Each structure stands twice: as structure tokens, then as C-alpha cells.
Image 1 (cartoon, chains in turn orange, cyan):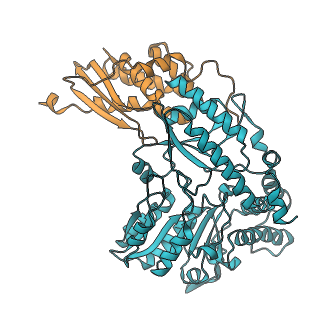
Image 2 (tube, helix red, strand yellow; image 1 turned 90 degrees about the vertical axis):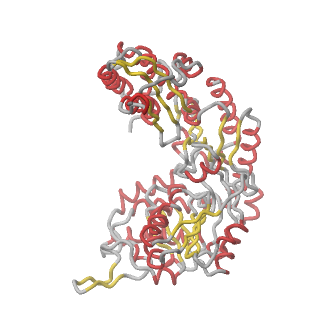
Image 3 (cartoon, chains in turn blue, red; image 1 turned 45 degrees about the vertical axis):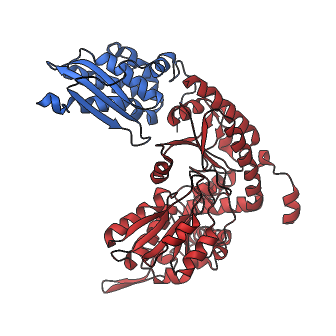
Length: 151
Length: 414
């Protein structure tokens, strides 16, 4: 069985990740949101709720709330920043690219911007679920229009 | 050397530590501190070599071949039963059923003993501190029979409230299942007192001994329970090994759980005649090499002496409890008067998984999560905790390094 590689060029908890954890961007509820959903990590009980305004298939205002670990919080913060102005199909493409990076299939992907800071998750398969949680919440939100928006 | 003389010797953990090859590993360039023994214990060279030797020198199937290797394999496998019988102080080796672990042992009792006796409205009494392995099997048989699983409450310190347990032992209760030692809080339950209460009301009692095996001297006859389950991998043996001890009359009355080879006397299409207990419950080819390893593990621990191990571990527990209490913002879950060296905690403002990953970078292995005890997590109102669980191969110096590392990584997240 191969040992986990000992040398780490950039640690998982690098400055950028810790910065987004300490001062998350797009943090808080979104007044007048059209879509919202919450996802829960069954392993630890962490929860992320994403609220957003979708107009002409394009994400406008977006925000997240919830209780979560540093990896989840930083991912949610970076993801919400990146999502502003994107279409639903662009977000699906970004999600696919993000999975490739955290699985270690590609070293990094310029399109993902700050989310590349999570690339070290390739060494921590058990923590990938933490970074996937905000994506799951976004995914669910996009298919869950809020009651007021439907009418 | 007499036990008295040995008891007077200081516990030489460095000497025993050297018996565990894995403990010499470096993790992220730092010496490993393994504080996850409640999850699974590390194995001494004696166990690793016994398994290796079995496959190199003695491999054959058990209880069916008359050739020399078959006799050797059977003797090695049955030696585990003898070792376990002595370790548990069973009245007879025939009361020890070899299983894949505690989970299989409890499921055997659930399906073979409990299910045929359960009727709608009946209850199975457990406690709020049980591992899922001592909850879910009962729920499964309860769902089939119309019975229900009732939890007995605990205190904030993590101790079973005995009066409440006694009050819940109504005539509806057909079986009680209680852990000997909590895998989350380390609480050592007063199992003799619990067994007395159950006997007075004629309720069969199963004790989940998963976490007691590595830490305590176990005497099933003195406890006075009906069933006692242990798992080998927490007792420094291989994974996939364990045992159910049960009173002879229970085993005799229980139908087989699995059918197959090894558990029969004769088979015809008109019907089959089963072997006597315990073989009646051991269908198919077992984990022979694993049990050879488990026998070696029990022999290894017996040479050191479980009482000496328990005394040393109490020193470690006191040290670790005091050191953790000095960490700012740390909340300890489980402060029972009688505890095994298991410490669950959270640090204010830091997530359990973040701390566990950062501690791993310091070479320290601790568990984070719900520890397969959702109801207990709910009781404490937290989704997850960190857990440091120690064994006799751990040292006071490791505790100091662990607490220093915890303070260091906590600062990173602040």
C-alpha cells in the first residue's frame, strides 16, 4: 500500500483558505431570492444553505449561511464569489472542473480561480465531501425556486 | 514471577511499544502518535508473525481434513476459543462462539435469540450511550416483530442513571443490551449491578464488550450477564475476528443464524441435523489465520497482565484529562467516575474535522465524527466530536506533545 506522499508544497490549510474561512465572502441571506436550498453532510452534521437570485438563466445576488468546517466554509465563500454572473450550464461545467481538480486528475484549472486553493484535497479523499457540500447546496438551490418566486 | 512482584514493577511502556512495528512510523515527517485505538488497535509483532507463520507453515481448512495441516489449522483456530474462554472466564469453551466481530455477535443474538421471542408491544431496553451496533440490530428485529427499542437515559457526565434503567425494566422488556465501556465517553458501566437488576426481573442481558476487551479484566460469570460480545481487532488482534459468549442454555435453545458447511452433523433433503453449540453458529470457512492471530494477541496481553495495563492506562487517563482541561475553550464529553482512556472533546470555534486534519499534519491520529453513536451526539447537542483514545503503548510524553499540537493548530483556525 503506498504511503501518503510526505512532502507538501502547499498545505491544505493555506493562507487563502484560512482567509476565506475567517472572512467569508457572500456570507448571509439574500433578500428577495428566487432559489434556495440546504445541504447537510451526514458524516459531521455540517450544513450549508445557499440563496440566490436567478434571472435570464443567470445568477445575480448569491449568499450562503450555515455551520461548517473551514474547508466547507472556504469552498462556499469562493464558490459564491465565482458564481455571480454565471449561467446554470456554466456552473455545471465549473462543478465538473472542480471535481477534476480535487480528485487530482488535473493539477489546476485557471477558470476556477481561487477554488484552486482546494487542490490539496487530492491528498485527502475523506475531506472531499467537505468541499462538495456547497456545490450540492448550489445544485439543489438551482432546482428549487422559492414559493414567492414561483407565483 | 508472582503477580504481586510484577505489580510492584513500574510499567515499562517503552519496552512494550517496541513490540508494535507500526508505532515506529513517521507521518508527515513526524513521529506517529496513535490516539485512535478505540477505532482499531495496533498489532504487536507476535500477532503479525503468527498470521504470517500460519500461511507459511500451517494453512488448511478447519474441522474437516484429517491430514496434518488440517489438524494444525484446527488446533490453531480452536486455541483462540480456549484463549477467549479464559480471558472472559467462561464456564466452558463451548459457550464461546467465534464471530467476525461484535456486530455479528449482536446480530446473532438479535435474530436467533430475540426475534423468535418478540411480540408486538414488547421492548428491548438499551442505553442512550450505545454504539450503533447495539441499537440497529435490535431495531431491525423490532421492526419485524412489532417490538420497540427503548433507550435508558444518562447523566451529563455520561453515566447511566441506574434508577431510571431499573424503572424501565418492565415486564414488556424481553432483552436488555448495554455497553460495558462507551466508545465515545469511555464510561465504564456498573455491569454487575445492571446484571443483578436484569436477573431480578428475568430479563436476559447482553453486554457489548467491544471497548472493554482492550482495557479491563472481564469475568462473565461474576458479571452475571447472559451474552457478552467482543471484537478481536480492538484487542490487538486481526480484523474480522470476535466472539459471542452466551450461557449454555441460551445457545442450546437458539436456532442457527447462518446455514452451511461446518455447522451440521448430517444433511439430507428431508432435513438436516445441526452440530452442537458453538459450532452450530459457525457456518462456512472462518477467518482461521485471523483467529490464530487473535490467540497470539490474547497471549501477548496476558503476559503483560491486563490489571497492570489497566492501572497504567488510568495514569494516562488522569494525565490526559488534566492536560486537556487546561486548553482554553475545550469541552470534555464524559466525566464519569469510572472511565477507560477515551477522551471526547470539542474546542470552541474550531471544527472537529479541521482539527483532526491539522493534527494529522503533526503526526497525530485522532478520530473526528459521530463515532457511530448518533443518539449520544444528539444528547450532547453536537454533531461530532474529536476523540483521543489511548492504549498501553501510549506514553505520557505523547500526551504532552498532543496537547501542545492541539493548542498550536487551534491558533491557526482562530
